[in-house]
Length: 356
Ligand SMILES: *[C@@H]1O[C@H](CO)[C@@H](O)[C@H](O)[C@H]1NC(C)=O
Ligand SMILES: *[C@@H]1O[C@H](CO)[C@@H](O)[C@H](O)[C@H]1NC(C)=O
Ligand SMILES: *[C@@H]1O[C@H](CO)[C@@H](O)[C@H](O)[C@H]1NC(C)=O
Ligand SMILES: *[C@@H]1O[C@H](CO)[C@@H](O)[C@H](O)[C@H]1NC(C)=O
Ligand SMILES: *[C@@H]1O[C@H](CO)[C@@H](O)[C@H](O)[C@H]1NC(C)=O
Ligand SMILES: *[C@@H]1O[C@H](CO)[C@@H](O)[C@H](O)[C@H]1NC(C)=O
Image (cartoon, rainbow, N blue to C red):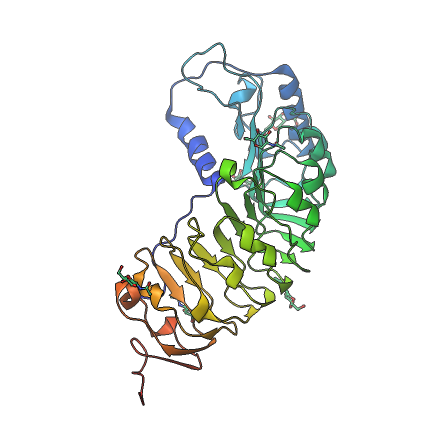
């Protein structure tokens, strides 16, 4: 057994992929299509050069049933009150889609709530400002595993007020995270991992989110080049998961922890330059995943760690820690690789503590 158990947090678009894949085997659907949305979709198709992705986007199929398009409601039980407005537009897993994000055409979908570009590496260029035209409705924006580059535009925070979920992971974005992102009161899911971001984490990020309404926050910024300290303001954010691994962050991280942070499940801080006293950390009862490997963390492992019945991952290797590793509970499942290369940690699974 290693430092990790089973990790699963279902991303929003995984659900979308499943629902689109399931459509192939079901009975015929009743036709639905809003004329204005249809015209906007045809403009999107033209802007992306009528690629093979648009094979089902033909006049004999109602536009709510075109591949990657969804109007909500139930496609199979006739209900005259169902909307004919396009709520979801998704471009998924296709190497043949090439060109820039057709922002002007997409802006014609004036009821759009969810826009996804996922695993479309031929989609390049910047995030277009024309997306602000659908700011009143857009709740979820995913641009992930694409060729999109440039800065994260500040209009995301200034104009896309309805956003609840922002996934810009695995692109070639550079520059700093715009501080304006802190203005979004419903944005509780942010993933901008695996880009080339620089600069500091905006101190007020997530501080205005109504987590009572929205649920606890998830923030993933791993694999960038972020510098500076973790904002002290993060002490006040109700996190469920935070992943800041593989950046160049310095200083304290203890503000993320605390017995009172009942929703906190996972903290990933591996490969930074963080330095704080681990023995002072207090962890909430349901805590499950902690990776602080490759930092300059000192102190000992808190005895309370052995009491955490949901603890599935613990990796404190390559730090400056000392003292006896607590025994009992889930501790036996973590092998020596989870504790190696510290100053003077001792006890199972490392060598016994000598010279009492
Ligand atoms: C813990 O971290 C060390 C250093 O990065 C790594 O070698 C080891 O594989 C990690 N263990 C697990 C199970 O993730
Ligand atoms: C779009 O491509 C399809 C084949 O994929 C073709 O039948 C159709 O004529 C094309 N339409 C335009 C406007 O180029
Ligand atoms: C991409 O284009 C190639 C060649 O036209 C075709 O064989 C392939 O099926 C296309 N891929 C997708 C995902 O449509
Ligand atoms: C935030 O979400 C709440 C509840 O879902 C909603 O009433 C409110 O209008 C949203 N705020 C914005 C700015 O969209
Ligand atoms: C971070 O910066 C270093 C040095 O400038 C560079 O080599 C590396 O590719 C950068 N990493 C990322 C993820 O941008
Ligand atoms: C661990 O749990 C036991 C039993 O509930 C309790 O007596 C003990 O104080 C706890 N230890 C720590 C360090 O929280």
